[in-house]
Image 1: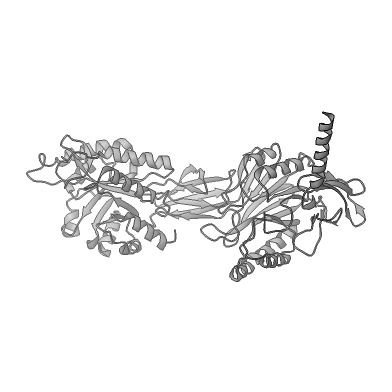
Image 2: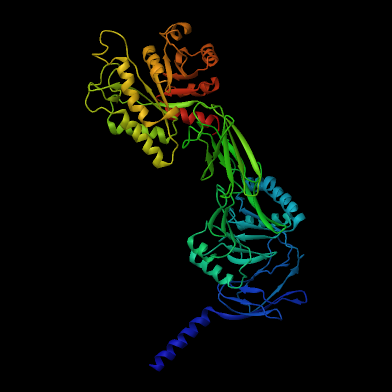
Amino acid sequence: MKRLITSIYILISLSFSLFSREVEGRVHCGGLLLQGVIVSDGTSFTLTKADGTFKLNLEGDYIHIVTPSGFICRTDDAFPPFWQLTEGRRWFDFDLTAMSRNKDFSLLALTAPQVSDADDFAAYKEKILPDLVYQAVSARIKGLTAGVIIGDVTAKSANQIDRFKSSLRAVKIPFYPVASNSWCGPGEYAFFLRDALIVSLGSGDSATRAVYLEKLLRYIGPDTRIFVAVTFPADSALTAALDGRKADIICPGVIPHGTVELAPGVLQHPIGNITLCPPFPAGYKIFSYFGGSLSWNYHSLYGEDDFPVYAVPPGADSVHPNSPVIKAIDFDFAGKAVWSEDGILRGELQKENDCFTAPAGRYSTEVEVTITNRFGKGKTLTVPLGALPDIQARLVFRDKTLATFNKEVLDAVRRGANSLEAELQLSSGGAVMICRDVYPKYNSEPGGYPVRDLVAMVEEFTASEGFSPRRFTFALNSGSGAGEGSTWPDYREFADKALAELLSFNLGDRLVIESFDDRILNYIHQNYPQVELCYLVDTECGLYQDYMSLLNFRPRWIGYQYEMLTDYLLSRARSEGMRVAVWDINTPLFFPSLVEKGVDSIITDAAVPALELIREKYAY
């Protein structure tokens, strides 16, 4: 038994000797020997002694020091030589340069740029590099400045990467790479920037990175401010390793959604992408510690700094087509957004992903949103409403199965149709149905579709998918004559039963009733004044004064057949306070011209092409 134990011990010792060897070295600043400097190979850690020397059981390919506060590994290169290759060596010397001892500093955090060909590199040198030079000069005036570059450089050769590295000398601040394969040097390392510890976790798997961080923090005081630069958003292992610390995690992100709090004292900052352009402005984040407090801002290469904001008008966003959407780049959880509608303060907005949605009324004219970040800087955006027409997807149930019809309805919602438009009928039993026959006769065909089921399906779908609610326009058409009340319903019965169903959903201004029948419109206006109405007019209706004289009021909407719309009719309707809808238009070629004319709504069988053309043309 003793022989077996001895043999196992010898085997373990031999195995360890194959992968580990003791090395020595020294850390100093000229003749000043530096005590207490952390030395590591990524797995093992030690501290320098009073004479600046250290011993370490080496297992990795690199040995590096955690450059202490007040010093830097000085070089003419942009990348400090805080690490050395270990192959074939037993002695390592790190000679540092002393820096000023004030507390102020800035940290530029950016993603690695794309320099894969001559055009990429020219674009980088024309815009990104001069911007880095300017920002670095501005920051250096206030205090010590360094940069971290997160991610692998997009390049086709080592020569291109070397060319990029050489170009950074012009910035005249030290840069530290946080990446896995396009840079030489260790993936996990750390350095002090003034009294803050900057940690790079750029390679290895999640567990390896967390283990490195846990070992490193054993040597770091509990009150030290920590920045952790990673190539991925933080996971639970990384967050757990920072438990009880005051830490800022810096990670890449195509869309910089803003700072979030992962745990008490642990903040995560997505920094965007330095080579991507609108709709999300290319840029990077600058952290500044001045006068005892830390702040940060998103610096845009092509727009405003801090938290760039811009407005998407109603009709341009497929998820929220009926509301102005405010895109707030880098707006964090500690900020605030309040909004007003036509000069009336409505309250605070809640952020979803990278945007705020202002639930403005359908007939409002303007929304104002004021956004203030955690540092007290604010911006106000005024969004005029009605820039784009309301696209109404015309729903035709005739000659379709229920499954096909429902699929078309939900596809229209997914694609961002503002409204859903359908004709209604009464069944012989008095149920309100989606029209399946030729109106105005009673619906007698079995397998009808109650309008209640349609509205409920759409309301439930939008709520479950996180879409904003959609609008509904329902046509109630009747006709006078001997068949009224027998072959088709009396217009008053039709209106009463339809509105009893529809008003139960409390749709508010999301509901419009349209009709060719002036009797129905006059009846609804008198008995249901809260309901918005649309007067449908075609080429057979005659002159403006003739058909308008049939109404006892001016409706909110007038719906013109496309062929009869003229500038005169559009102007006349506007002057009398009516909004203009256009129907019987299914040729996408004409959709942009209707936008240019300023119509308020387009009722069409081709809602999806209409949405695509309008959003493409107007760059939303």
